[in-house]
Image (cartoon, rainbow, N blue to C red; front, side):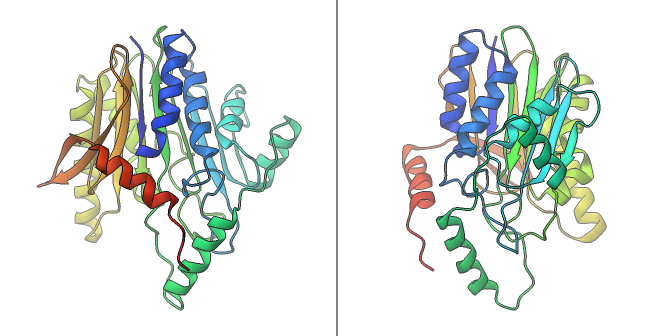
Length: 317
C-alpha cells in the first residue's frame, strides 16, 4: 500500500507526480521532496517558494521541515533567503544527528556549501501583491493575510516508511525573522512509521501551541483512526484557544496512518486537500467546518477552474 496526502489544491500536480514515484517503488522521502518542490517552483502559488509573499520589509523568508518516520531523523530551515528549494535543504539536514535545524544566515551558509541553487525568490508579481497590500493597510496594524497557506505533505511508501514535509513563505508582511509552525517538528509536521504522520496549515502561532501534528499521531498511536484523531485534536485546540482568549486562528490538518487510511479536520471554510492512494485516482477534496465538525466533499471541476483562475489573474494595484 502506498499513499500521499497534502494540504491545499496547489499540491495536486506534485502529488500526482509523487504518486507515480511511489508506484515505481521509490521512497516516501523522495516522493515528499519532489511533490513539495513542484509547489515551491510554481510562481503563481504566493505562499510557498518562488513567488512567495514577502515580509514587511519586502524580503522573502522561507521555512521548511522534513521528518523520516523510520529513524525519527528531522531537518528544518527557517528564515532562509534566496534559495530555490528549502524542502531539499531540510531533507539534507535530516541526514545529520546534530545541527539539524538552521535559521537565516546559518541556513544560507549551509545551503551554499552543499551546492543548493541560489535564486532570487522575490518575483515581480509578489512585489505587486506587496504594493497592493501596503495601500490596503496604510497605517493599520499588519495582520495575517489571506493566502498564507503552507504546503504540507505526508507519504507512505510500499516499504512502509512514512515521511512528512512542509514548505512556506509564512505570513504575508510578517515581521522580519518571524517563524511559524511549519519548520517546528511536532507543530507543522510529524511522522512515525509505526503509527502514521500528520501536517498542518493555518495560523502558525496557534497551531504550534497545541503541538498539533504530534498530537494527531499520538492519538492514532492510542488507537484512534486518522479522521477521529484529526477532528479531536482540532476541536480540543480550537476550544482551548477560545476559552483562554476568546478566539482561535485558522487550524487545518491532514494525516495518514501506517495502513494508508487518511483524515482531515479544519475550523475554517473551504480548506482543500489532495489524496492519492494505490488503486485510486488523485483527488481534491473540500473540507468545511459546519456546526463544529469537518464535512468533506469532492471539489467540483468548476471550483478547480476558479481556484486556478484566481491565482493566475492579473493583479490590480
